[in-house]
Image 1 (tube, helix red, strand yellow):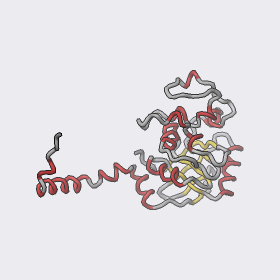
Image 2 (tube, helix red, strand yellow):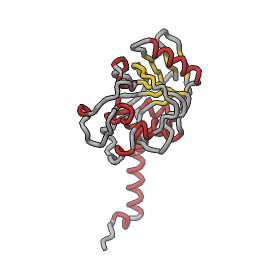
Image 3 (cartoon, one colour):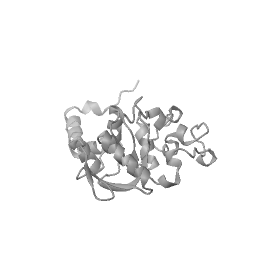
Image 4 (cartoon, helix red, strand yellow):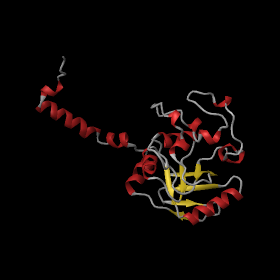
Length: 216
């Protein structure tokens, strides 16, 4: 998992409340469990005017010129600004996969659905909850100033605006530890690999019959 320490990026404002996971990555794209290739179908039903199916060439699609991520000024955005209850709906880890593979490193919103919030941390994506009034001011600035960028310093737990104003945010200490070190669940387990190997060796020495495979 990619580490997250300090990130500076272009902000894309998505002015919608209650964006659910089916909007983030529609159900027809959930057939794959490869954990790759979902970025091209992020917000598929909003990004394109035609219906999308897995395996389609994005170049053959009809983009929606009114959708925020299709506007030239937001090309290359890596910080998504959203409204309350982002990531609601069904539980699907494909949603943070799609956001990450599109190029987003962080999402700022007044609130998130719990399961989506947890899945973001497990996949290297930083969700930041800020007061609704503060998010509204960020929307105003992002819309008013083309090329609007923010710097997110996870170690210091602040969002830094272009003029230097710092906005503090909360993050649970264990989640912060995992993100700053790039540890997903497998990475955390591998930190204990020597102890695991020692345990397995001791267990087989004490119960050697466990090494045999039953046939029949």
